[in-house]
Length: 306
Image (tube, rainbow, N blue to C red; front, side, top):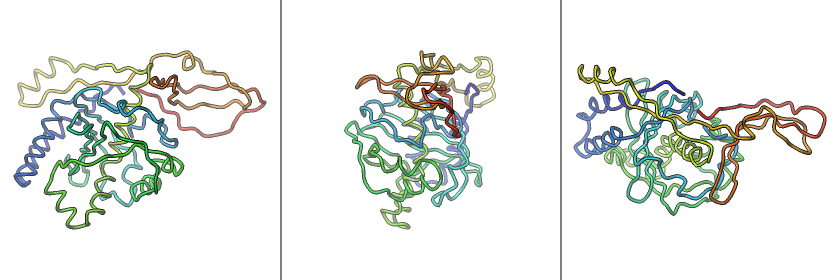
């Protein structure tokens, strides 16, 4: 991903359009979110923002891994079709921003989406909080997890594995949230908000896990200075520089063939490998030459970290 998406500017422009229709309390919340978005370091992610293989559980890593790489980050990406094909999705939101920042109590993750039917960018009314004391927990598969399984976001096996706990919520648009609670009840409102945030939470967790790998680095793509000066003269917001992920070559990822034993040859998908308790690395996709005759006949979805 080397092309700018420029979603942040479009969202800020739409915030100015919708703020007057909000209550005074929610207007203040929107202005605060807009201020965070203006100061955010932007990351451009591939479609779906699926950097990790979601059919498998994420590795259990120290909670500090999930701290933002900058005080405020905005992850821009185009949604995959499955991201609006479930019982919770009321409308198509093909363009997404996951906004994360260092907040009181931990890392906050908010969702800002382009609602296609309305033709406007709007935020979800609350943000999730991952605290420094967050734990990996197991438990019953809730309604949101069931929706994620049904829409192909994760596998049933993944949902049953220990997962990082979301420790709370902070209001973004308090009165909108109160209206949802009055209409659907507290439990129904929490399910609805959680389903609205799940794709952005997944995108953010994938990014921080990728950045924790010792062979993944960020590269800054700068916008043309002359173009931004021209935009400012015309009264437009300047285009923001953005970061992309870059995978450095590694011994196992450089070649097409890796080594294996006791299995037939097969394609190994990109994945995270733990080297030590506090060190992980990304292993690129490669062919593994097995010691047994034949080739495993399987269809794989191979993604490159970009």
